[in-house]
Length: 249
Image (tube, rainbow, N blue to C red; front, side, top):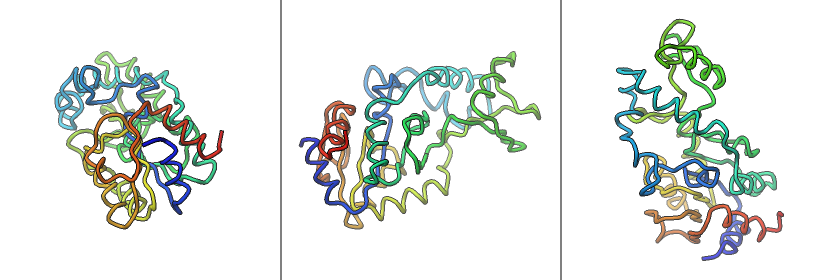
């Protein structure tokens, strides 16, 4: 289907929510997780570097990986797909944005009412005294530590405020996402494989309450056969065409 068919669904919907995954940030130079040959988990085993038990057992190993991850994300900027979604919000067409991404690019693009279900790299916190630190401070603390571990003023390792493997999603964020999904006339699923639970259950909530799905992503998803519209081209181009079809350029 074409982007114009998504625009038609948007025109007919009373409430629209967006759900985004790693694919929306790929044009910004951030690899997704599972694409063969380029995905982040093609190169490393996430259970060996990004699990909560690794952080607790071997924070030096954990931060060796996450420090590189932070460095990779440092100079990345929003792309046309992020900006198109922010434009849809500015126009009052899309309400909240539920995102699995931790890269802060939606906020940089101007999106508001973000539900970051996997957290954000914008800050880290101490698991002992609960003190919090912004990203720039965390980077400085990591550089200053001989073992490359950013430490709290109390001396304990800091943990990025992202959901690691082995952790539950933040209750408040997940509850809000579920409410948005269940009350949406239309969910735009952008750049997500829709395979990682519990977030992958959100489109089903929209369907169960009588809403529709529009999927804009490369690669198959489990919901393709139930989507009212499906676009599989370049996410920047597809989102740009949707905005243009709605007369928002």
